[in-house]
Amino acid sequence: MNKLAKRAWFALALAGMLLLGMGVIVVRYFIDSPDWVTFQNSPHVYTDGVMNSGKIVDRGGTVVLDATNGKSYADSASLRRSMLHLLGDREGNITPFLLQEYGSELVGFDRINGTYSTGKREGQMMLTVSADVQRTALAALDGRKGTVGVYNYKTGEILCAVSSPTYDPDDVPDVEGSPETYEGVYVNRFLHATYTPGSVFKLVTAAAALDEIPDIGSRTFTCEGSAVIGGETIQCNGVHGTLNFEEALAHSCNVVFGEIAAELGPKTLMRYAEQVGVTRRYSFDGTTTAAGSFDVSNAAESELAWAGIGQYTDQINPCQYMTYMGAIANGGSAAEPYLVKEVTYGDSVKYKASTSSTGRLLDSTTADRLADMMHNAVVNVYGEWNFAGLYAGGKSGTAENGGGKAANAVFAGFLQDSDYPLAFIVVVEEGGGGASVCTPILSQVLSACVVAMDAD
Figure 1 (cartoon, rainbow, N blue to C red):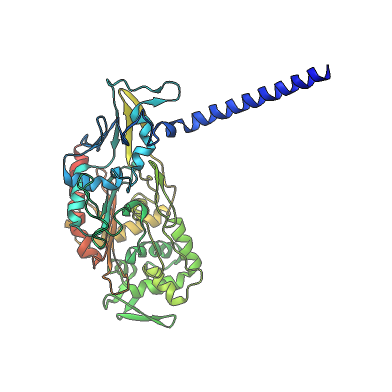
Figure 2: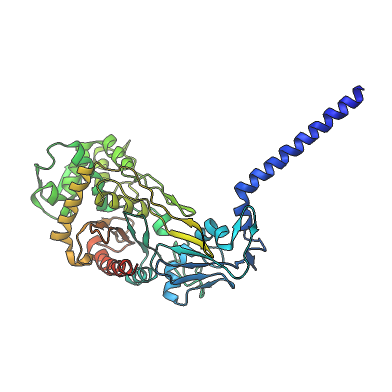
């Protein structure tokens, strides 16, 4: 009897373990099966390592990748080059994160029916980017290293996300044999790189000053071309004489902003850098942006001054900082960016994007005042004609590299227009002056964005 009881308990234990194991498998299946199906060696999805189902189109319906019969990129070589860092290459050197994220939806898969592609239907992913804008941006960079990003700060749709250098995935160059030409070619500079911001960082210092220094709007400052702060000479880009806070931003006066940074102190500047998202990462569509950095906790007073100007150890991510521009234009908060509008399979919508907010990055009064100051800079310094003739705000940056290299050219800003609510950023590595180098690029890209949005 005891033996029978022990055997019964042993059998029950085995049955319990079996049921537990089956439960774990079922749970794992429902959680991980989309990843299993789209694994690179899955015979249902890949033929000789190439996805065999689905198309990717731009916001206007232009096919940028067709995987229904092997992997075919766009017919245009310039379009293939402009989309490389979003779609990946054939060799796997650049990750096709969009395909990895939505592969199961593209091939026709659900957890009940498995892969159900019949050949009569197909998956399609529609991106938010415009093929024409991508090509325009890459052409405007004209072979220089850097990035151009533009997005709709009301909806979150990214219209442009170009990274250079790049190459044609259908005509792969000798990357290893041309290290200078293709330096960093496998990095998506818009999403995954960080840069010293230069004077565009003054928009963080300015936001802190508007909130924390009560009389900042009524003060006057004097710039004689340099100033000694913390025992070190802070050199300006000119001799500006007497000017107010708005004029100091428009003329990007290092003397004024160095003095303001020293007055604000390290804790306040670090708090605002975090508040506006400099250190934030955005995750969307299978990727996560790089985080910028701003740490002046142990900085000397002179180093703090340089940090408030946008030098020292400051780093920004282009996608993140573009989003901050959207928050300034939009009263203190903006939509978080994304790249995929929807994924369909046949008549079924498998995924549809929705707008998510950054939350409040700035007080609305502060954002509006800063936006007015940036518009003043466009009118009086940068030229309204560079921004598709629309109401714009902007800030240039010339970020010193050191080591005998030319400075990086940076420009960030926005359009405040109900039909074209766009925020943007341009970085040209070793390009020199931010305004002179970047505004001609923006002029072309924003005009192309207007055309693309009118066609929607």
